[in-house]
Each structure stands twice: as structure tokens, then as C-alpha cells.
Image (spheres, rainbow, N blue to C red):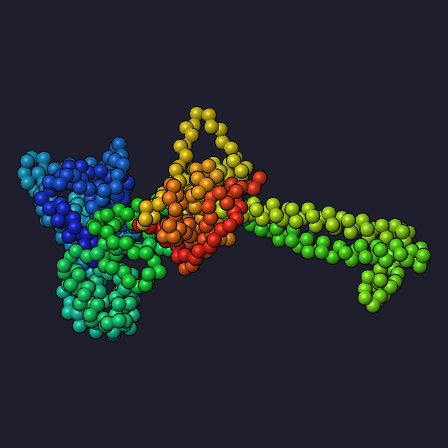
Length: 562
């Protein structure tokens, strides 16, 4: 993920088209490393977000950002010098990650003055510098003195100098053949491309190499040169298999060959807003669900260990018949056993050849008591087996339930869904019940709703509690019920609404069911489907647990309709 130089060039063009000749209406500083400029344009107010830490970037934004009640000193200075200023131009030197906003402002005595705001997007060294018409620093977000840098000092009244230029070729100025010769000289791989062309990210370098496999590098360099010269680009977002945003680009991305989803946007501002808002939302959800994730993970480990120990004990109980046989043989041969003997050898009439068997005895008790000792051990093992089978069944059902909640948590996208999972775990005794006094109870979330291409409503449960409600209360007996076969997932209902449910609706709903399951990353997922009247809930079963009969199975690729 990189806000590279060419991406900045595309953003600069977009900002210039929207903002040139507009005036600054508001400036605020939500955080030390974040500035927001609002401009009055003929189309209304437009905002520019300048972020200098945690994924530095600059772009047009429609996101709502809180304005702190007390502005920092730098914000007050910017308001004083740039409040009401007209934006005359936006420039960028040779695809470097530096953007300059050129303003014409009016000073305190009413004279017009030229001011510039340099925005440097360079990782942890990102900065924003306000200069006067002679490029002398007025102030900066991050001041750099002589102790911090010997090459470049950023302090008030000092001359502003651009960051040191890298030894790379500008795609707009260099000849494509010269670029290709340098790439070849450096090894011809994506690292060579990255070290040759100014203003591209590692993903773009890999993309050029990937495309060059079907043509040649000269063709791809020429295409990139034409794209940059046009200055419009293709705002593209790449999603991971789990649906989280992975990277963004100014050109279409083909290198993943369909393994990852790629989405196009109309503007770069919309692209960047979507990428960072989705990423930040997922990060917040991950942080807020960390305690639940740890609880579920620990519970899974505990139950798995418990089941393994119980199965080992059950395996020992499988030899109990030998105890009964020894008791029978000893009881039948009491007259042959001497009192105080430590063992006795008798014919085993349970074996086909009556082969002799030696039975170990306790010499401190009588032969009859030794026989009873074997019967007692046999009965104890028999009772133990019954108990262990019941305990293993119960622990396995609990483990399946906890794993289903883990799957719910992995698909959780909103705080309301997370709250519903917490409430479910409280009801099942896994979390402490909190006092509801004085607290507003959250309104239950409705099921997720889709619609098939031929018009049938498709309802999807968000969690185990809603699965039960959807299947056992909301759905009509003639509706269609779907669930992944042998895979944790959600309940899906196709609403018949008095009509015969089509095969198309079943297939599309099955794809949705697969996408809302633990098998969502698989190529083919089995999904069972049957009428709701064939689905029932066993007495005392955990939330979300049902049984069903008279079903059919279809194999589909997980897919959520756009």
C-alpha cells in the first residue's frame, strides 16, 4: 500500500479540476498530523484531507471529520494567513510525492500576498510546510532543526528546499527505450522496475512485469507513459479474499488473475475514502472484538483438549470385555485356585481352541473376591463408557457452537453485530451479565437481505440467535432453507411468497450461503437446501443448531451479489 508519486499526480489533477479559483472557507486540525481545508466552489463546499501519519496522503474527501473545539497554534496560523485565500494553482515536481498549493491571500494591512503550502507525502517523514512568496518557511507541522538533519532544515524564516530527488527516471520526460535499458541492466525484474521509474509503488512494478510477459516491457512502459500524460487514470481498489481492502492503484490490476476482487471507482477521492475508511473500520472492529476472539480461542483449545482426553479414556474402556471374561473364568475355576496365589492359569472356554490364559490375582483376598473384583472393574468401565460418550457428545456440540460464533465474529462488520454476539455469549454464560439499569437496549438488527435475479427475497441470519428466529419464527413452512453442508455458516431463507421457488433463486441463494460461511474462500462449497417445514430444533440444543430431512445438495462457488 503506497501513495506513490503517480497516484499523487492523478489526485493533483482531480483536485485542480475541482478547486482552482475556489476560496478557503475553513481550516481545522483534528490531530497533530492531520489538516482539513474546506473550499467554496461553484458546486458547493469541497474538503481536502491532508494526513501526515498512519498512511500519509492528500486528496478530496467527503468523510465527516470532527473539528476540535480548541484549534492548535498551527491551525490558528493557517486560518490567519490562508482564511479566504484563493487557490490559484496546484503543482507537483516530476512525479515526486510533493504537492504545492499556490494561494493568493490578503494580509493584515490589506495587501495581496502569494503563499504556498507544500505537502510532502514521504512515509514517516511526511510534512506540510507553509511558505511565503519567496519560499521562506512561515511554519511547518514538523519542524526540523540542525540537530535532526544536516541536509535539510525546516524552521521559520529559513529558505524552503524540496526533498532530495531520487536517482530515477521520470516516466513523462525519459524515453521509453532508455527506461527499458536501465530496467534490463538492473536485472529486468519488478525490483529493477521499481528502482528505475520515478513515482511507482511495488504493486505497479509487479503489474508492469506481469503484463510484459504477454507483450514486452517497452510496450508496457509506453502505455504507462500515455496514462500519466493523460492524467486521468483508473481508480482501482484490490480486496483480499476475506473482503478487506488490500491496496489501491491508479491503473487496472490484472496480476492476481481473478484470485482477488478488484473494484473500480469514479474518482480518486472516493477510492481513497473507501479504502481508508474500510481499513480503519476493520481495524477498530478487530480491536473491539479482541477480547471475544481471545475468549473463543481459549474455549476452543480447552474443549479440544477435553475431548481428546475423554476419547483416550473411552479407548481404554473398549477393553472391558476382557475383565468380564476373566471374572467368568475365575468364577468357573474357584476350586482350582489356591488361597494366597498371585496368578492362575486356566482354559479359556471363550476362545475357539480353549487356549490357556494366565490371570493375575491379588494374593491378599480370596479367589471369590478376586472374581468379584474383575466384575466390579467391568461394570465400572461399562458405566464410564456411557458417561464418556455423553460427555464427548456434549463437549463436541459446545465446540461446534463456539466455532460457529468464531465464524460469526470473522464476518462481523458493524458494532451492532458485535454487540449482538456479546449478548448471545452472555445469555449462554460465556460472558458476565452486565447490569441493564440505565442502559438503552439495542434494537435487534434485521436479517441481511438480498434479491435473486428473478425477484425472490433472500434473507441471511447475522448470528446464531437470529438464525433460530429466522428459520423457526420468521420463515413460512413453504419457504426454502439453505445451509452449508458440514461447514459452519449462517441460515439462509428464500421467501416463496406463494410462488414456486426457481432453480436460479436456489443457486444464487446457495452462493450467498457459501459466502456467509467458513468455506467462503473455497472454490466449491456444498450447500444443503430443503423446505422450512423439514427443519426442526432439537430440545435443549445450542443456538443455531437445527436438524433437517428430505434435503438436496448443490455445489457452488461462494459469491455475494453486487
